[in-house]
Length: 241
Image (cartoon, rainbow, N blue to C red):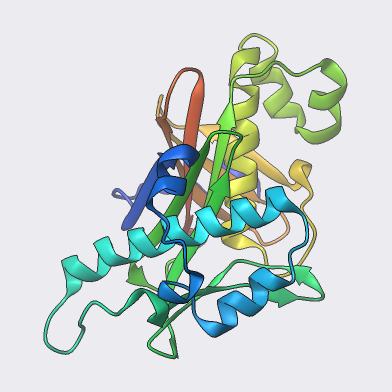
């Protein structure tokens, strides 16, 4: 089965995605971590020695909690109150000793809502699925140029053919691959050439993951000059006739 066999029509995915400049987020974060990080989150932060990684980790958690509050307020009722920030935990997870997608824990209970975070030099992007058991992944990419060696190493023959006349799409293809891998991976390493991007229209693409014979719908949104937020949502595999 090739990538074109599993492309399916789908409505807009049930995902809340928000991005912000790092400088803005730094101005929002409370100075005392105990005001918004759980004990387990503070333990995870203590294990990060590199200053840049610590900064990105903090900004990503703050952004993710803000997005969760948006989702929770939309779904809120007497049985589903919006929790305190310290009761919204975004915890690391590992599969086969490799980092996996973050886990969202609310009021001590593992949430079925998918969550994903990405950082660039200037921005942070976080997304949470509005429905349970929806797998998502996000990435932030810019429009930097890539050389022929990069294309041959990480892109499929069909992608290389498309990019041969539209090279400016290369990093957006890369973002589609990385965000789809985040949504679909089960602990295996990232092999970009195992994911193939198909352009459906200007802003909605699909990305097929050969390792699992499944796909993601990918949406791209400009987030500034020559930069894009990429959100991938896992799709059901099309049943054979």
